[in-house]
Image (cartoon, rainbow, N blue to C red; front, side):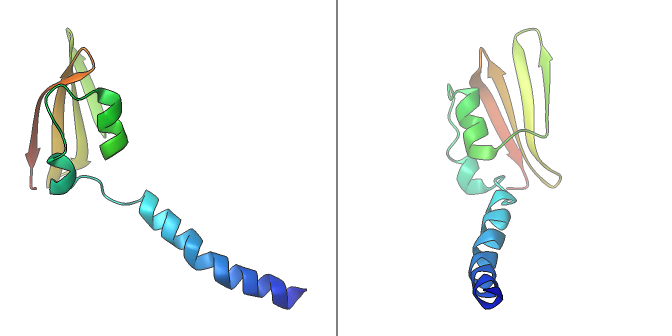
Amino acid sequence: MKQRLRGMTRALLPAALGLILAACENKVTRENYDKLAIGMEYSKVVELLGQPESCQSVVSVKSCVWGKDPKTISVQFMGEKILFYSNTGL
C-alpha cells in the first residue's frame, strides 16, 4: 500500500508543480498586450491579464495597471470598456 501511494505521489507531483507554475505565469507580455482593443470589456481584460496590481477611479474613468516596473500595462476604462491603453518595457 505504501509503495502504491509513493508511486501515485511521484506521478502527481510534477502535474501539481506544473499547475502552480502556470498560475504564477506572468501575463504582462507583448503577446497579451497585442490582444487588447479599444472597447474591450473590463472582465475580458481581467480574463486575459489577471487581476490588476492597482486601479484608481476619477469621475467615470477607471485607470488600472498590470505588472510591475519595468514591464507594465496601463488601461483606462470608461463604462467598463477600454478607452485607452499603453505599456512600458514590452
